[in-house]
Amino acid sequence: MNTRLFVFGGVRMLHRALVRQPLRLSGIGLRSRSFGNTAVGTKDFNFAAASEGDSILHGSCRPGYGDNETPRGVDMALVDDWVAFMQSQDVKRVVSLLGDDELEWYDGDIEQKMRDSFQSYIRVPMFKGDAKSKIIDAIEEARASEEKVVVHCSGGGGRCGLALAVGVLSTNPIITTEEDVKEAIEGHAKSAGVKRKVDIRKLSNILSSGNAAGSK
Image 1 (cartoon, helix red, strand yellow):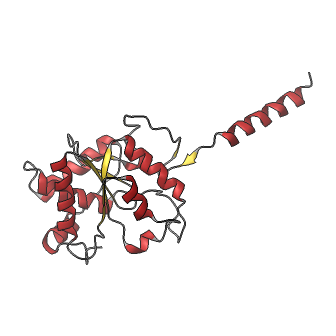
Image 2 (image 1 turned 30 degrees about the horizontal axis):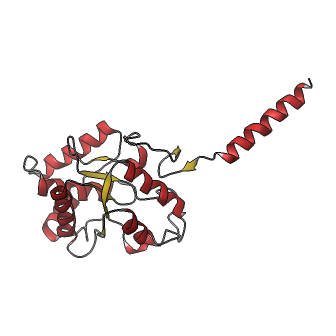
């Protein structure tokens, strides 16, 4: 057999296989769309519980997170991947912290997609109005219903960490200080392999004024 033809034929077969079974860039890293019924790994979509032992409150990055922060830069197929993953983790409720300008990154109606896919969806921009009360209400409703809720900003680090801190302080009687909640959230994030940040100055501003305006 001609060795060159054998190698070339193998390459063509591999190419056809890859074309027929493409991998998708979904949030963070290359991964398949099959998630199963258990946690794939905490680094998927920067997803993890807010603190150790919390079975209700979780954080993550936004649907389609990546280098695509341009008008209509996010393919809605990536949103489908995020939704499928959250549903595989039994998430029933979503609290989005995205601003109006960030919605323009999607090439479809991201809010309608969330409303159609989850039992509850609310968007709470962090820099206007009484964001604190809306976040607390959404998390308290999730705890009362014993339904998992995921809070997301863009990357799932800064704003998400602040909102999780607000939620933990309002619903966990053991964690009562800003320093304690920072340690609880950032410590658990490190052990879970995800990224969270709780800026004490920004958190104090939210707790006192109701939103993060003036604390960027």
